[in-house]
Length: 525
Image 1 (cartoon, rainbow, N blue to C red):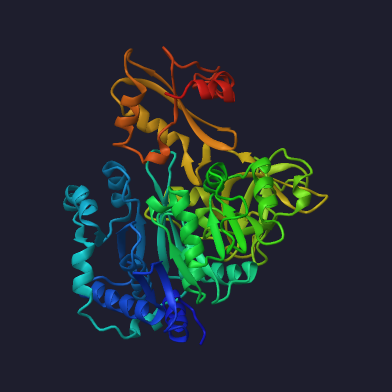
Image 2: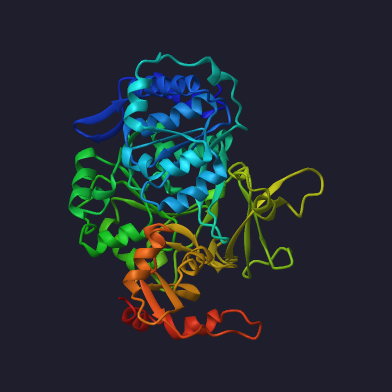
């Protein structure tokens, strides 16, 4: 059958793999494909019973559970748009997200619902504790829905929120067709079969999880989710990988570097993994070489790249021994996916010659619809291909600076054209951190910078604040505004921040003063 939407794709896979395990948490908590399909159908009918129709938004508290995965699939079956929220994010930041996407329904655990009770009431959002929704949904019919057949590939599938330079997160919208293309590319690139077992160490509100969820459950493979406490405990993590027989790993380099530091990736552990996939930030080659040597001959290593706005991944490079002749810099991005095209443009919008640096602009079937309920940002970043005056062809301006190396035809990342950074895999606008710092009554000026020390990413804050204000107090107050992963690990205080000739904060001067590894280490409080 031709699968033109994700709901059809999943129910066809579920029919073929009905008796096989789809999601495995542990020996006591797992579900087979046929059961997961029925659970998703019941949730879909429950949503219809609550008045939801195609293109309505459903927000899910991002705790990993069988109900959460089934709810994501249930939304896809009726054309509702799901959006997974960080359950640990401050209520104020969640308010901004909910104000933007205006969901009709909000699911989550009791504590999460309680945290957002006032916001939900203020915005007119129906908030339902997950246990109550699960009990109610169990009473509905579990057979496949006729509505699923009328959905097209152009329907939005999910919204994924990322950091915004204005202090307001932005929600990238991906369609069913976008994700179907990712699934097929992933199956081919990583040779995924129903015999594979994929890890899900990435949080569900983080775009790397898009690969975990779709490359596994929509290919007939098994998904093994890891909860936060398991990811933070190397011993439990490696034991679960072994017990579950995981074959494909995907995470940010930071997690692998952490496991390397804890001696968990010495080649004796994680022996079932045939492929380590990593992306979302750079992997320092000195650290990557150690991982390569530990698993050479048994496991392949893949460096992947892709913005949230282009369905998680759009390029892949398999690491080889030749990459470690020179240990400086980062491994290449490799080649963009076959059915993508790209341009590298200079500041005037002209194509740059090979060997020169420019902004990477992506075109193709993984380019999303834009930002939800945000036409200005969409118009600024999703633009017409300047080389095509024959018909509309949308192009996403990534903001990433790259260079095409003429000798090997590979793309190499060169940095950013703005203040966006990758920290622990999260895409963060430094301006959002600065906006949060400036919300504190005792801060008069603030700048946020980013650096790397021994391969580990760090955010550094320089503030002009009232005398006597402790850095711990700043951290405590910031946790009410932004998520933990945005909280600076290093603080420095100045009487006032230096300015450049244009009257703006002198970031280059601050970077020269504070971003040497030794000084950054001294600044930890």
